Image 1 (cartoon, rainbow, N blue to C red):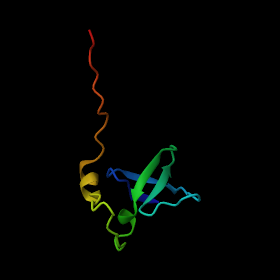
Image 2 (cartoon, one colour; image 1 turned 30 degrees about the vertical axis):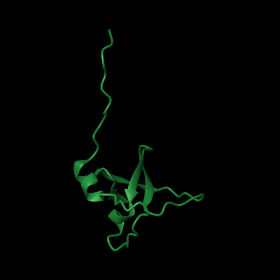
Image 3 (cartoon, rainbow, N blue to C red; image 1 turned 45 degrees about the vertical axis):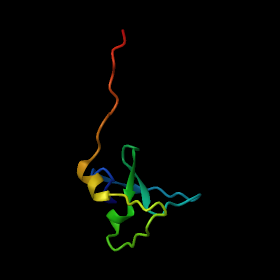
Image 4 (cartoon, helix red, strand yellow; image 1 turned 90 degrees about the vertical axis):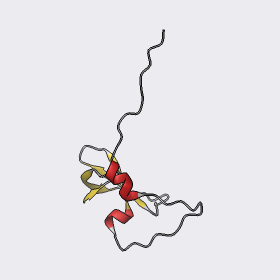
Length: 80
């Protein structure tokens, strides 16, 4: 499967099956290096109907993919 993860990175991998509790809006894809990526179902199926959340908020998938991964947010401080 060749697709784009939620950070806008292009990946190639296989879908991982979760039999205990399948997710409704995401799938997990494992690439050849063994890294796991989150794929939103809206990326794969454009005709998928979204249900409104109980909290009244909506995940901005296109905004997240446009900005990409922010990298390490940890800043080192010198103590002393």
